[in-house]
Amino acid sequence: MSEFVFKMPDLGEGTVDAEIVAWHTKPGDVVTEDQLIVEVMTDKAAVEVPAPVSGRVVSISGAPGDKVAVGAPLIVFELDGTAAPAATAGPTATAAPTATAGPATPQTAAAPVLVRAAGHAAPAAQAAPARQGRVMASPANRRRAREAGIDLTTVAGSGPGGRILRVDLATAGTAAASRPALAVQAGAKVSAETSEIKVIGLRRLIAERMSDAKRTIPHFSYVEEVDVTELESLRQHLNGSRPADAAALSYLPLIVMALIRVLESFPQCNVLHDAARGVLVRHRSVHVGIATQTPDGLKVPVVRNAQSLGLWQIAAEIRRLAERARTNKATREELAGSTITVTSLGKLGGIASTPIINAPEVAIIGLNKAIDRPVVHQGAVMVRRMMNLSSSFDHRFVDGYDAAAMIQALKELLEHPAMIFIP
Image (cartoon, rainbow, N blue to C red; front, top):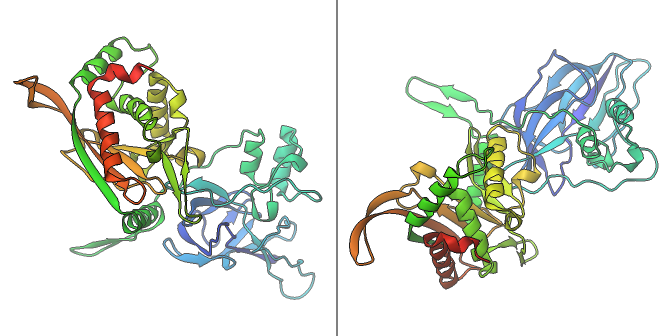
């Protein structure tokens, strides 16, 4: 018998520690290679960590909510003497041969990991280029590659030191079974009159990012009312003649279409602020983030290249992404890379709101509830359908005049929706 010490891996981009979100094993359990053992979260991404070996769990380090430093012991396995861990290279990996006599010599290695998006974070680990020489991969992944006819020398590994992970094989063409996405785990302490819920995982990350955005971005909020009576008429007409396989239109796809047109004249709002380099990255394509409430908290799936899509395509993509976000099936790519965000509380939209910018973007468009109320229209009091737009801008880079002009241009299109479709 020998022991194998599994250390917290270096997850890249300056990560010094990771938070334990949920353990999927406990001391005494027998696990197999590639079995999910723990979920952790860094400031960049949620990470699922599979077992690098088969064996019995001797001990684990840290409870949900605790942070474990990179390179610190995470879990200890007892091997049966025949199973040996695959060699792993990288900043946190060290290895020692199995002892042949005397006390068992612990072995250590960094973990292969499956990275999933957390909020609007950038990837935690970038794929390494294919390397010459020996290919690093677990026996299970070598078997999968062999069965799928994949040449491992052509696969770029994204694990520590270029190790090929299961997700890399999926990218190369293997239909890998997906693991469940990260779920928020919260332990509650209950007393007679109060309860304590530990802020961990996705909820902690949301809290930190909201705080950072409000602390570092000088928000300029602008609220304007819009007469959407004609937009509502168009929406009902389109729904009455929609394709057989299409769901009913909400306001959201129509407003996204109008926003795309407006950004042609206000490109300074389709921008990402790269604070590290001190530059604004202006995008020609419009990647619209759709703020989506899920059981785990707020997520922002992205409709990519929205400017190249038609109305029904945008509507279908919004529905598809929202469903994947709510069911924890959204990929890292689907939850990152937006250039401007639209947020809507739907029927709970109220009169006005002050949405927080989804950094590193510089603008967010908020939709409030549409209601019928009496207004003066063409010199007479009549009932019209009204909606308020509550938007926020990064005042460092978007002047108040430009922000107001953009919303007024958006208002013009929404009040005369035929203009949305005229080149």
